[in-house]
Amino acid sequence: MFGRTPKLPIDAPFETCAIDTTNQTCSKYIEQLKRRMEMARNLVNTFTYNARKKQKYDYDKKAKASKINVGDNVLVKILAFKAKHKIEDKFEEAVYKVIDQPNLDIQVFIIKAPNTSKGLCIESTYYL
Image (cartoon, rainbow, N blue to C red; front, side, top):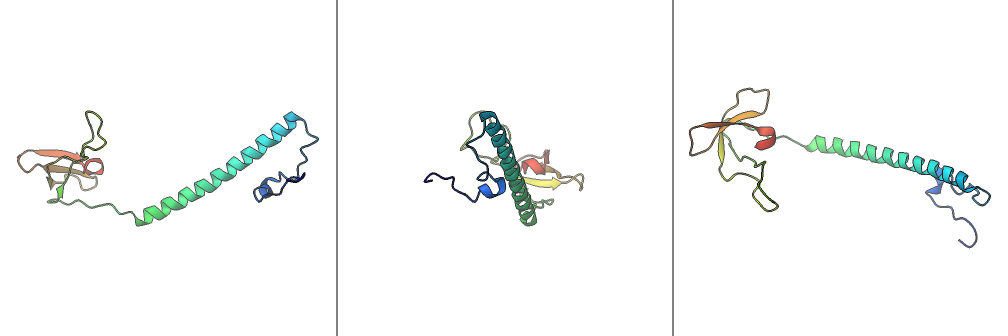
């Protein structure tokens, strides 16, 4: 600006304003530019990684999994659609009842539709 290089706040960590660019060759300038861009990218990656880690920690503090017990009514999620399904229902129309949980260590339940006597085995993590 007005014949001089302005000092910007972003120039402080990279020391770009202290470099005299008038007496440099093109290849030297490109090498320095690559080095400064690499340093800026590493700095941005560090800040975004730390922000992601903090946001995950805060989310995990508040997130709670729902408990499904025997006798609860549940909806079964439709996983395979035949065509475009942007506004289609995400769950089946029937309301199922949990009749058993064979193993208490894993989230697998046996559910029963209201009009049938046969049970279905469903993993609750993905379907209920």
